[in-house]
Amino acid sequence: MEIRYPEYYKKFRCLAGECPDTCCAGWEILVDKESEKRYRDVYRTDRRFGAKLRAHIRRGRIEGSGELCPFLDETGLCEIYRNLGEDSLCRTCKHHPRHVEDYGNLHEVVLLLSCPEVCRLVLEDDSGEYYVRERSGRQGNLDGIDGEFLKLLQKVRERAWEIGRNREIPMDERLFRVLALGHDVQGKLVRDSEKCVSFEEAYKVLGRKPGRSTGCVKGGEMERFLLMGDFMELLAELEPVGSLWDEMLEACRRSLYHEPDSRKRYGRDREQFLLENPGLSIQWERIFGYFLYSFLLAALYDGDLYTKIKMAVFCTLAIEELNLASWREQGAAVSVEDQIKICHVFARQMENSDGNRLELEHRLKGKEFGIRRVKTALSV
Image (cartoon, rainbow, N blue to C red; front, side, top):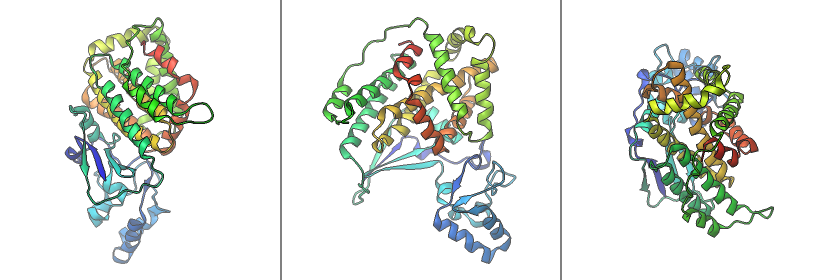
């Protein structure tokens, strides 16, 4: 079995009470059966705390009356941890923000971007590399695993990341080239209604040299304004995770799309924003690499690698828009701390809600987010 993890994985240390946010808010925490049984047993030895455990852990979930976890104390620390010790935490709390995806004989470990400290590690990651550790003698569950398709997906991701980290071309063009790659590979895998799979043809796509940029497309900035306005409206229709998101998203939409002179200012402001924040493209590159790594191999289970790539591209574009709005509102460069807040609050909408992620994938398949429109919007 192979265990793959990012270079910065072992650098992670929870900030605990020093964290600028808390992972104990805004989402449903599942409790594994073993932990739930242990919590029920606490009542025999500690009736006071046991009664609180009974009151708030029901049907395999921690349930509270507000946004915060009911076991989060006034200092921002966990009462379960404080009263029962680290080993007493349920699996979700014990391992967060660590997350493992199972692909048979390949297990991929990620640190979730929804944690502020993980955001810092991602933004500081110079290598963009992933390590592989072999576990000899261990065999994964291969039921439902198409090994040939998994190999193709890994090759697609390698090629996409090669394009994504090529700093000789602008970031928007990199994103479009990756999107075009996914579009073309997907086209070789599904043909007409027969759904004939052609791995040979798909690998040929990976071997092609990308075409040159056509340069600035007339009206591109206006199309970008409309496309991203539509996408941010779509995000507003999803269930918010955490109170910070609504405020951040609405401030972005109001500033960029809903002011009287928004259309006239958008292209001019974005040009000035890029001039004043040249280092942001490197951050966007690293964020894109994170989303690409997180999303793409999940196509093993539904066959739709193109939409997974589209998710990575549009999530990166959303971060760009939130950065632009932050710059416009503050009248100052986007700091690392600003970026950490933007990224982890945005990531929670995808990582802490399966419903949001699935709905976003479904909506991105629509024509309003099609490749032709993206090409014009990104001026490539």
